[in-house]
Image (cartoon, rainbow, N blue to C red; front, side, top):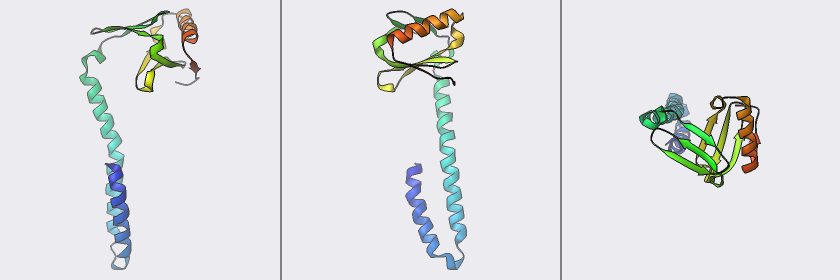
Length: 142
């Protein structure tokens, strides 16, 4: 939608610019203002739709457990259990707050918060396991 506004806005600016001698510069100001409101409002609306879609999924409101093993990552929710082989992942990013496992194609990720690990030893053991199975990228940020 905003891409369709850009050519229309340019055309309106050119037409209004040709009529400056008549004092029609308010047309440009109003057109740019309307486009700015629409373009700034679209990301907010997209966020609202995402939050509504996320909250409508019942399985997003239940706890998830992750079990790291030599075979892969076992995830368990109220509705499903799955073992994801390490070959299903392309890389792992480790930050100070979480582990992010990127699946093939980069369209899906598993986020495991650091608070999931009960001890510092568990955290270090999982980091070593991941380093032995996948390319690891460590960052200092969140």
